[in-house]
Image (tube, rainbow, N blue to C red; front, side, top):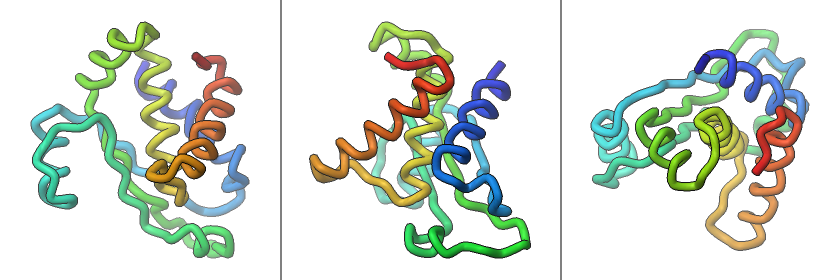
Length: 139
């Protein structure tokens, strides 16, 4: 079940952002709150469990000009499955929708989007919602 949701979501993300013809792939790591906390502390110096972490391998500008025939990793997305369950209940929607959201959210961080400034946040949210709508999991 996890695999199908993740696959469908990522295929839609790659199509939406025009990355299908590029030889890039993503690592998706499903983990526990303790492990995501350890990773968060190790790589971001933040000692707390979170829902999703993204580790991009390219800058946004590099991706726009990427044209290598050799497969390369686009980045890593780490998702706490317990947080997915918890947040699905908290927000009143399905596990599938919350997992897809985590994947989409992580993907957009990987390809260079952020949500620190309100304008950036609006752009990123619109992109996320568009993908979720395409796969039938909008709010």
